[in-house]
Length: 416
Image (cartoon, rainbow, N blue to C red; front, side, top):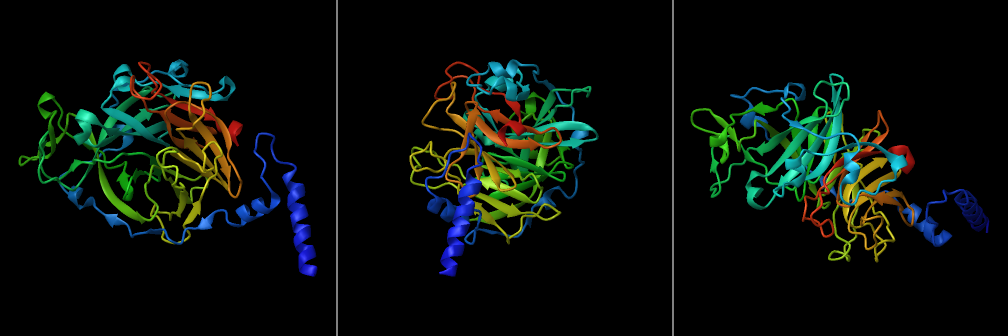
């Protein structure tokens, strides 16, 4: 009887605290369901494991000179101001907007490369963004690349950027579309998300897990029209990368088991975990329940095989009440922010949403989010939540001949 009274008292306390929830949050269906959900929130992912770090850097141990981001010649000019709000499906309320960038005409209209991941860092007083792209159609053999963008208004190279080809040591046995030499080859992955941690880039690799790159090991290679269809190091020591001036070699990877597909990756606000998300569409994959996973990271940036947690976000926009179409994740405290696409409902020209999910809740709190939105990156020093959109003209299901591609930041405090 005493245990029953204590339980009833606990339930009453939960009911009282629940009265003070924010007006825009969706209330629980019942106290019993809420209690059950909260007890099972942020569960240990006992079936998920991380293999030991594999060092793949021996192929660049000799015969190469390295550069860091401050030494890179940025050769393209982005567009600042408010032009980013003109792209198709941009629906962020004006009072929530803080920054925006549009690519130059070639990059915002190209159909052979698509931007996916976003991260950032500061070096020598200069703020940078990093964007990952994957190659498609006629350029698919070129694999993936990152873009380094200067976003410091006081910098002499403000809003200039450079594409850098990602490479790895596994050389294909045969190639039909280009000449492949030794030492390194294109990295043919989707490049769905990137995270920055202590000088290194962590790239989500759909079925493998995480690939690692050292930003202090950028390599300059030979350029010119004769290099357009060449990659690798030839017998004379010449370096080629499809006329890209710089390459960034993979230095290692970690295989993650039972948590794929990895659609995105980001460091949590506390800097103690990497968070990954699973992309499953809400239509064709409606029977699959997507999850997000948190992996503890040590001071060297190595994912740990203990303390892994899993969260299963709810989202009542989808028929099974789970969050589908996860393109980006960001984690702070016990809350996860999700950039989700493919909603069955339209909001000011977009079927994407920014969804905020609190562990154990019965639903997300949802906000307008631009059409074609991808990954998330939180720039804590300024309180900016960055994202980007992906579609070139005539690419998305809705944008027709209009450009959808831009980078933007919102005031994160409006979404907490």
